[in-house]
Structures are given as structure tokens and as C-alpha cells.
Length: 184
Image (tube, rainbow, N blue to C red; front, side, top):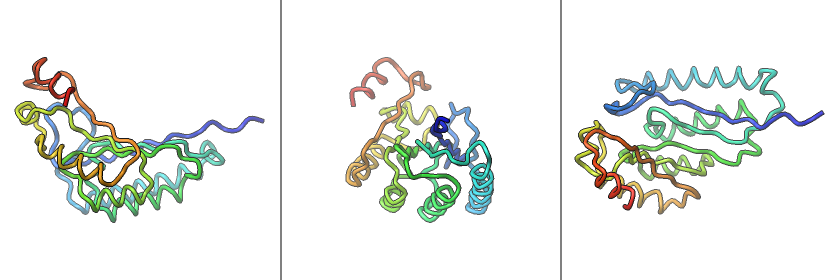
């Protein structure tokens, strides 16, 4: 008998402060705390059900990825609660990587502290472009200064891995703006 294959977990947090003009993911920008709380409660029930299923029982989690939307919109208390719920539903004893997507404007010390506490090993910072004009034309609510501020806070917290997401082909982008962003 061979060991069951490792398990990966993707958790979608479908809430944003504002939906970007180019976004095609399931996301809501009109959710108040009540709606987010209801979603997290339903997510917890669903995770518990999956955790008890025959397909999952006995399998250890290898990685977890929190995407969206903007998972970093969650309040630190919600991050802690979500992680407790998921850790009760799945075996996290061998997790190699926990990735959490962050939007620059949502980065603050309290959220970063909750993510470090939760064992997040990689932050994925949704920069998209390092040109304020392109960001504005594409409906992003952050500016380059928000990226720079977020980067300093993330670097100070000492996350083992940080990736910066850039998008090619944004509204208003030129070869120059893209390659300048890449260079920065």
C-alpha cells in the first residue's frame, strides 16, 4: 500500500475594496463585514465537511494558497479564525508553503503579524504595474507609493518569500512602462 498523495488547498476569498477593470475572477466589492463573516462561516462548514471525507482523510496538506479577490482585506481576527478553522479540518503537520495574496493598500503591521502567526511562508503582492498612470487607467486603487510602503513593512516582518505580481498588457501600458516596472 502506498501513501496517499499530498494535498493542496486553494482558498478563494472573493472580496475586494474595488474591482479592477481587467478582473475576471469571482469577486465582490460591495461586501460589508457581515457578508464577509457569513462567507467565512460557510467556508468553515465546507472545509470541515471535506476534512471528514474519505478522499481527504489520512492525507496531509502539502501547501495552501489563499487567493481572491483580496484575501488581505480580512481583519487580523478573521485571519486567525479562518486559520484555526482550516487547521481543525485538515492535517497541517507537513505544510511546506502557505501563500497569501496581498494588495498593497491592505498591508499593515496588524495583518502582517496575523499572517506570520498563521505560518504564512510566502506573500504574493499584487503590484501589477509600477506606473501610477497605468494603475489608474486599469482601475487599481493603489499607487506606486503604496507598493513601496507595503514592501518596507513586509521586508521588516521578515517573510521568507515575497513575490511581486506584474501584469502584461494593462490598459495604458507601453513597452517602456512595462520594462520600467520590471526593472524597478
